[in-house]
Image (cartoon, rainbow, N blue to C red; front, side, top):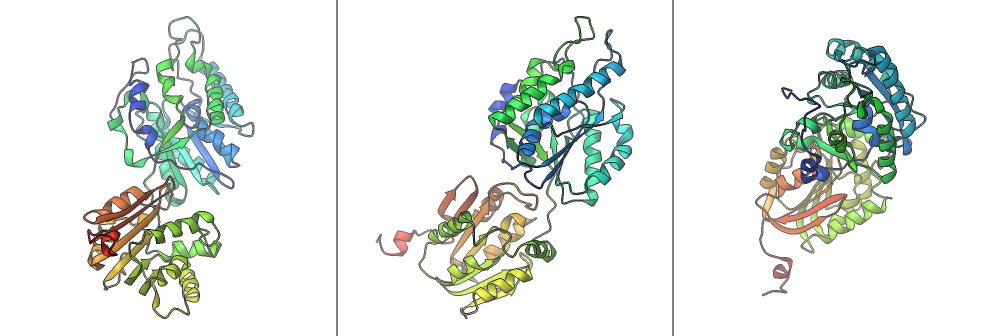
Length: 448
């Protein structure tokens, strides 16, 4: 990152960020019961500025939280006439301990004591330290690699390097100084995610921020002891949410059966399709959106356990259902054994897309796995009849195994088709499109 900044500059006003789309980026759920969160900070106070809300919320929800601070921040006041680097290091360690106690008393921070301002020279050491401590970790949080502070960037690089052998861990990076020197156009918007903070989370974060007195208050009235974090800088960290740059997901592709086989090995119904009211209601809404009483031929890739397939079979002369997981195929075949007009096949989409025409294609909770949406779009277009209907339904929240957002999937698939139904909720999108522009009322004779 080539950006240069001075913490004493006026910087970008918080009003600019509040006027941006920052508060509307995709919300994600933080770690909860059974999760293990490791927060890596470059300096004492980084963990509080960038992730105190996440830490407090995660601990309150039952996640195990560890905090590692790479340096002691002893170089924050290089010209101080009253505080030596060693004294500052002691104070700043104590401030982190107090801040973590304000967030959750069970969090005992670990200090590595790397030289402040020179973490770049110790990335290897940091990586080797982190590697054995990722066992069981679900979330690794670090400063943003493009924050324009060399220590922040070095911590991000170490975190990225150590995760090469454990890609299942989610890596979230928090900007700190980018809010000061940057403009909205400097952020990677497609990778931004937010954690909303409750009033209690926000209060705990403010209490933790108050602990870092060496940074937001003068050490003394003498020149060189000025506060490092002025009020206009601290304003960036009083938001009702925290923002993270989420590493580009690297999920197993839809065609990788091993990924889904592992899910079914853990549970016969990994998504609770049969038992959850949420799933039953969503299926009801999807079926209600179908613009015809009957269809000639339907294709449902990613049929899972066949619950939606069974409902489609009631309204279609022929149904082809496919999935990549053997367990899912067995469950679907068993469920539909008495429906000879339903064919259940193992299929790797989009590679094994059938060479048939369908007047109904249902893509429910599968499109976000596609690495290249253009391929999926081409497959759909090539097999949809001139009067064909496309139904698309997807979870809106971010997930580590999703290569695409619901919005991206629906935008790509709906291009050039006539919209029949759009249903938008906080949790999912449901769209129904058709190659035909006619409405349900026209098709059924209500309108002449």
